[in-house]
Image (cartoon, rainbow, N blue to C red; front, side, top):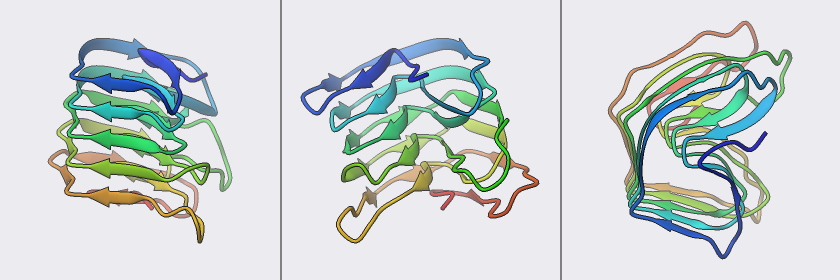
Length: 171
């Protein structure tokens, strides 16, 4: 679905000093790729942004700032909204719900730095984190998460394996 204020941004995109507020409701299921600012970041820069968006969704890969980072950077950004989601996937597929970003994929090197999650997350799925829900790297793709803080409550329930509720990263 790639939903957000921007559905997808490329490696030449710069989103800076943006503040968003409002409500995002979606019925997309599966890998919905929903972020309040960006659905998929394909190498762009998101800097000094703040979101107070209330997100209600039925799918996976829901992020407070961005859903998926296929590379790129999110710097000095804050999520103050809420995420409430019910996953419809079953089995061991990637879930990923994160206060800043849901999924750091293995498609490119990503950096998340100086970010804060102050938003409450309530999810019925696996791999839920205050900053990053799921980080997927390789021997050559190594993501950086540094100087980030989770100041919010995270609640997650799942019938699947690898249920994770973490302050910073779900897995």
